[in-house]
Length: 192
Figure (cartoon, rainbow, N blue to C red):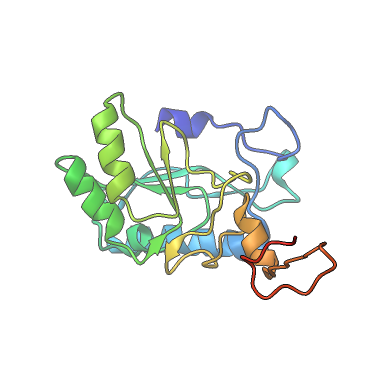
């Protein structure tokens, strides 16, 4: 919670800023609606949840970093993609339980696990149903050198990043050129 409160919020073009604004007024409104949904569902708002409007925030779509606890996996704030600075802390008993919770949603854009145990990391990589899984890194989804698009009901279903872009944006065509200047009976025929 303390870390969420300390995040530097502001203009995303400033390299010292850790969290920029929502992309537009509609997304900010969606974020605020989800915060109200979380409170109405019984989740405990630990910090954040308010729009920032004073000073440098006056002409933007800025929202405090928001953290909920006491979130049940079936609550909407745990089941739906918010795409705002809203985090739901969901208790679990062990790694397999956490994977079940993560896989228990209709979406699968990206996932992450933080661990020093390589066996747990490989278990999570294998079992998490997501388009990309990060180990000891945040789920930023900005790996332009890798195919990325999510699974289940998230993303656009295409893998237009990395070399996957060639498949997405092109049609493959096979071309065979014979420079022998002779009519060949078959590809296995050899010229004299």
